Image (cartoon, rainbow, N blue to C red):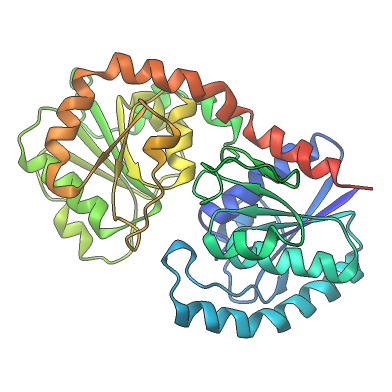
Length: 347
């Protein structure tokens, strides 16, 4: 059995992680997985795992930040992209196509429909929901506007983001070996992260907390989108670790995670029962209301009131951990749940 994943994005961040984690779960059911990315995608995450990929067109409209103009541009490119994807489907003859998020979901679903191959769309944006739910079996992740709706359509499933269960296998001692001398184990440790890339507002949030005088280790991870962001991180107690490949070890030191209001890192923290503050407006103003999805385990904050929200979280860590524990097992099982839904579509 073979699955073809058509993945939006650059093959570096969350979309690629979603695809790889689902593929890893599918492989346990004897399904061989191949991947297709946009011609321009550097695919660094795939290279890191020693994986090759096919090159086709995968238009992007900007996800939740899409405008009428970007949607129109993407729509114009979608026809050509669909024919490219359909041609690839005929060449490699998969038993199922998996369209992953945004343009990848739309192109994947249309190509599957065109070639008569079963297809599953992984959804998080309003545009992929509008298109894919009409023509394919779909799975709505927590960022999707469908996730918190009462759905009766049997072809629309809901699932938490497919966290890699290996995230639980971190090593605290290895993380401590990587810490600089200024790290103090006796202090609370707070992680600031917007993923593999450091966005400006996340840096500003860490700086604001540092200026407040809170006695804590403030860890920041991610490669800055602009070098000037590094100047923001010069406050006391800030330990800038940059881009790291050992996040599973680092989580073992973390008492509280301040992350963006989107899926994967919030759910990694929830899986590990780490209380979360969702810093709002970090990525192009996106808002997903994940505090409502993970009630009691996630607080929301703007940059300006990060100290007050952090104080509240630190005072109620035990209670927040208890709420996170309620969701942990289901989050860790999400990749397998998604894999079983996909395998069920294979004729």
